[in-house]
Length: 352
Image (cartoon, rainbow, N blue to C red; front, side, top):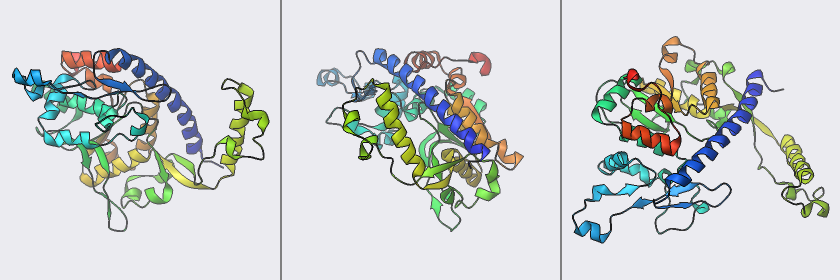
């Protein structure tokens, strides 16, 4: 019998799917408009995703003295992209190949994660790389960052394991003593087998594990309805895509088979658990930044944060929306976020 936390998490999964789907549809519509006149392609599949590519100056531009720093990328705010080009350590984030590259039209240049209009990493860099000195100071105060260090993107943490080794966890951003996990259209914070999560050295010191959201993880490959030959007869093979009865029948086959598969205990919100442990080991704070249109992500974060044992560690755990941060951005960046992402600033100058 699933525990109460598991039942709550299943309800959250359904809400997450709905909220994430609605946000993906909105971003798709906004980027189809934004992409006009900008180098881009659409992915295969339904609905397609807009993916941008860098726009290099022509030979004529270079001959006329146009600097390479004037290069553009449709997925980026111009000032942010210029700042990225000037810093090799930031530019290295473009080395990350898009995991769904095969779903894109062929190109001479391999598609990158940061090319996607749905990329939370691109949104993170658009914001933090697009800030001027005064804006950075305001954001630094809001997030409680000491010193004037620059953000590090894709920072590799060393989270201690119980047997003396380390998990080289990638954190979306480290800014001084602050670790940041950025989210946009991702479905959830991932799940992981309990035996793997409990292998972290500080797990029991940091978390009340009975309060963490639990799931049952199926250990066999999910099968499609057509793989059940004894039940999937010719009567259903020619079913039209809009045949509700056929879809319900086929869905029931998959659901019954899924229930019969072996299961292993696991934890939901794995990315959150891991990053809190990274913050604990590094004596840092940890902040989740999500879109206000994704209250499911905030709820998932609060479930994990409620399981943190000590008040000292809980106060180092934060959450903020992109909308709140946008209120601290310069006018041009605010306009970019509004048009391309539908992120409307709240707080504005008063938040500074």
